[in-house]
Image (cartoon, rainbow, N blue to C red; front, top):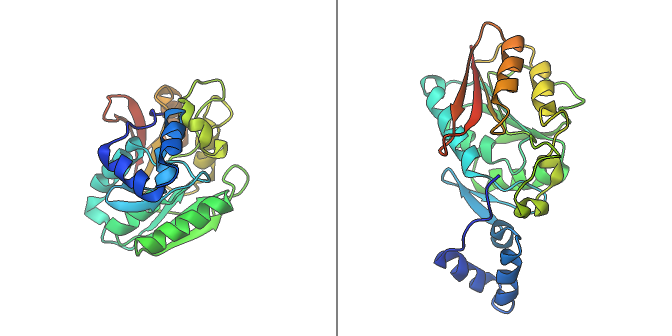
Length: 240
């Protein structure tokens, strides 16, 4: 997970405008680790404006890069009416970015009704149509088959050390059992067809375990692990 970002002059200007009477207090909160993104209430994610609050994970640059990679991989069929799903959608940033750049029928699922409320607001804000569904992927089956599947699920092992700013983010969106692998195992189990593309964001030390899991589940697929901008192996792609 990345550190809480360094304040820019624009950040300070926006904070002063939003909190004219408590500006110094807000600066202190940030210095103590509280995410500025929650104070400002929004982030820019791949040229879409995303509202955030403590019910949703703050979109990371790593996730933005995942979507960039996916858009390149699907460029040849992004004009088709394919079925797309974002599993563990949170703020909806992934689904919204995909919807803005394709003709897909888009769905986003999450266990959190509070997160889906924010996701729905973000879809309206960005003028995209997405079907939001409350679904616990650990216990419930997917209702249909999908052509494109993306997920940035909880993947932090509870024993891992994380940046202090994450203490303000929803733990339900961060941590997973089974060495952080539980959600990937369940998602792979829930997929009944051979999608054109499955894309996962993963923890930087999970690539070997997940490559083994993916190869067992889809032995005939093209499965690759790719690096983020920091040269860490952070993405797995399964292509049919």
